[in-house]
Length: 355
Image (cartoon, rainbow, N blue to C red; front, top):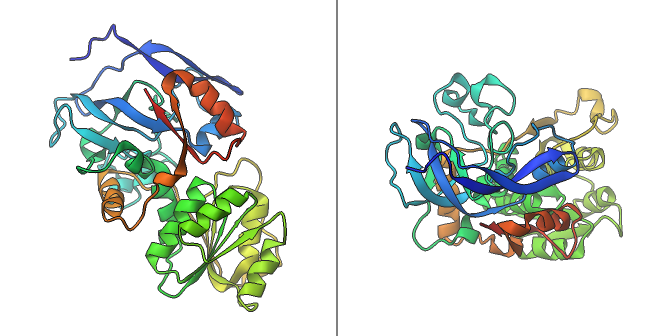
């Protein structure tokens, strides 16, 4: 058993603009919990929203929601796992027993919007030496032999979220899809669109290196919005028809509106971005509500079955997301890593953090 007087290093939200590395007690394990020794984690764009005070969390909370680790301790009620096993847990940790979970809406666990997102939001997260995983039987996913930490690092959040955007958009074989923003989630949405059957994928970003990565991962046409209007470019490329599905992967009014403007009548806007301000619908692009558009939002699907499926994709070699890890830092330098990631310097996409 891990002793309650042990301490660990953890990245903690203090106030807007400050996430610092400090010492905290190692969590106590309840009957349904598992304690993971974190071997690799990363920083998410949502963590930057937390850092900036755009998404509220309690002061003193350990941040981070993308854990890869080894089981250190198991609660008495946890079945099917053993100490020392390599596992991941999703950013969303559903209980698997409430009405939303049993109804298939695991991300909304407990009946509250975003209720399944607990790690680094309502309970301590995983940018630390140890993390407590609640409802462990529903959430721990063993890592297949042969897959490295960095190969599966994208599964807990950005891969699940990006693929979720393609799935929620109900992409069909032969569809034309536009993905606005090619950060880590947008790149995963591009891969998910291709795996879902899209035969023409158009991607938009302003960073040449991200557009190059987008092409490498399956985009057919990349558009640099600093050089030409992406709406005009997409409408021209589709002969004025528009796209079947537009995926918004940034969370701004401009990208949301652009997605709506490139949709064909009856098309689907699949929104993945975290919006931190008021969002409005332009009446002309929305066809005054009569264009048969579908607008759908997605919170990262979680739970062990979701994680198992995503790792199957990686093990099959149909997707390789290792190139998304562009930088590596030890946990001791996580404040430096935040500064790099928050300011998007040095071509950063994802940072592997290793305690």
